[in-house]
Length: 100
Image (cartoon, rainbow, N blue to C red; front, side, top):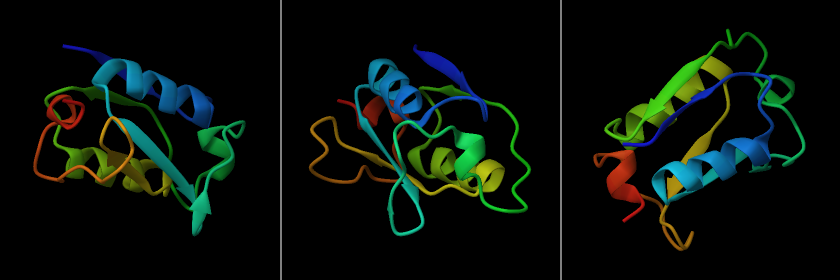
C-alpha cells in the first residue's frame, strides 16, 4: 500500500504528483475559488489561523477524511478526483479505491 507524508514546505505540484503516483487518482488543490499555483508551497497558501503540521497519507484513508484533514491542518480545500480527472471521487471510499 502506497503512502507518503505532507508538510507545509511541499509545493502544490509535488503534492499532486506524489498523490497521483501513490493512489492513481487526481488531486485538485484550491486557493480561494480557483486552483492553487503549482509553484506555491502549502504553507504559502495556508489559510490564516490554520495550524499547519505534517500528515501521513495512507491508502486506506477515506477520501472525505483526507479532504477534511487537509482543510483542518492547512485551511486548504482539496478534492480527490478520478484518475482521468473527469469526476470527483465519492467521499466514502478509500484513497486507493478512488484511483481504480
